[in-house]
Amino acid sequence: MLSRLRLVVSLQLAKAYRLGVPVPAGRIVRVFNLNSRLVYRYLGALEGEGLVERAGRGLYRVRASGRADAWAEYVLSQVREGVHAYFQRVVPEVYYYLAEPPSIEWLGFAERRLAVVDEALRGRLSPPRGYRVVYASLRGRRWRYSWDLGAAVASPEQALADLLSHDPGFPAEQYLLLNLGRLDLAEVARRATRRGLARLSTFLAFLRVATGRPLPQPFNYLALCDDRVLEERLGEYVSLVFGNGAAERRNL
Image (cartoon, rainbow, N blue to C red; front, side, top):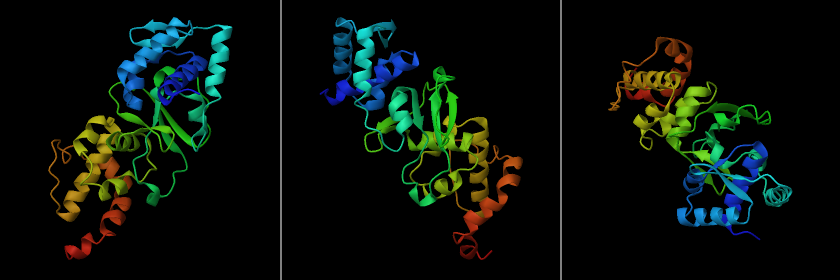
């Protein structure tokens, strides 16, 4: 039986081996919040046994051999599948995350969950229909492994930025409205695409005008307001904002 740290590192290596990509050791440390010294010590031990080899600076991969195949098969047999069985079984957590902000159950469950996957895996995966997959560089993105969910998940700001940018059907504005005091909106803006930033800015501008509520931010959302976004989502904004009592409070 492998310890948690050894199982985590081994699973990243085994899944990456099946997909034909190396594993960035630094990501293992960061995504799983592990002790860096112990991670590299275990990688060194695997390297000494001839199971693993270096594939570049900070990169490791399983050394192809019959012995390595048997080892990877054993490691993958230790996977405990849950809700996100395909990702748990196939995709290294250092190569993807789910863009799902915390406490969203009250919004209902999405028909397709947004998964952001490292562009290195483009053409190597066959995710089930319940996912909207976006391939992108993961450099600079913020995500962690959730031991409760058994999957890699984005930070709240990263998740919201991705949903605003890539999932027009997700009620991101509703989540945003009810979590204004808990979110770093400048961080959301910095991590969003141009489309996501326009959607964020347009909703904030509408909220400012509709409620008279001051929303001081280090980015000029009023100037970034997009007329096309406003036209597309005006009915949604009115229902969301005025349906929460703003009209009554301001005698509108």
